[in-house]
Image (cartoon, rainbow, N blue to C red):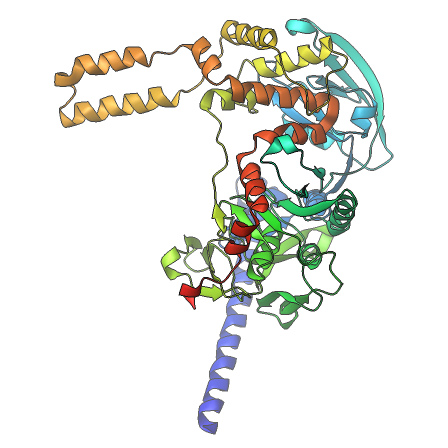
Length: 563
């Protein structure tokens, strides 16, 4: 046995020596190649571009979360980690109709809001530097800067119905902006879903930035003071962030001393256990966690830990499946690297990473099929699986937008920008509107919108037309079209484009989206969320479940057939 151990030790040291030699050799070759190119290549090289491209190509052979940040982009990494940046506090977008960057949404109480900027304001110049022809990222970089610095912003505010507009100049002072990680919480009204005993709280958590657990705790304490007896925690579209913050949030619902996350990596310092360290706020209150395909990373730690400990019912669609942990590493000359150092494992012992990244042959990835995943058990004995994200206890897809609504109300799809212009004009004509939960467009309002759409030249790709054309192509290919030509042509006539009819058929969805845009202009993000809740299919299902205590308990109970 001693001889075997010595041989294994020798082999390990040989492998390590070979690895170190390969590393040194390839770095020397890379350096030599660049030196020769810089000296001999026909054109002068930009080292930032050429070497930067080499670095990015190297990282592309790894996973997409290992990223290089040159000195000029390090601020983007800090913004991602902290949720903070210095600027004016507004969403901007490219307006296709004007081919200019415009203000889309000022944040409440931020410099843009305090200066009176509105949705639709065209950004003309920043400190006399013209913004015509510039893209969103360019304009955004000019609006951001050091806290306390000032600049002059020139805008053009369009008049009603797309008139010439009014030019305005204003002086703004940049300041630290931190987007709220809990943009909305509250007790759900009875008209949101089924009647119930007690009160159900709703909390939307959009990111796991530094100290977000503090804001979640404050919201939960407030909800309890309002009489909350059950909770819906919304993690849909939450791309994650800090692992530590996720552990703190789960700790609010489970007892002290629980191991929630274990990380394992190449380096010893990458191997850690994360336990709950505080007394919880509540360990018995029913909880439903809403998730979808964009729920990732720290959000999956939160949802998966609550599932593994049988502390909450998970509802929605399967989550993204990111089971990897990254840390920022400082590099020379103020550059930075975000590098994957470990995988994480939640209480049942599973890792929910959905994609296996290979680092040989230039790098590739493979999705882990369900057939290769493994069974694990929750604390109560329910079966859960690794790989492929968190599978909800109750699977329910969210509502999807009809094509016409997506084109009208989504950024960058409608070249006429008719919906944006309608909202801008509506706000200009109405100094105030009803509260967010009560505001609705009238029939006359919607008819005016319809008229604008039909007169604007609005066009969109209709799914029925595309599918019909594909069916005709297949029928011709397989030889069925000629004998059924009359039926095909009759169906084509029935499916002919009638924009007015389609606006009527999809009125409920389109009108709700317009109302949400209008409400945002008066009541900001919080108002937009509030007005959307009554129409949220997954939320209403969560309310139905949380009010059916028998069904809720059954989902968290051990199925005797699995024992």
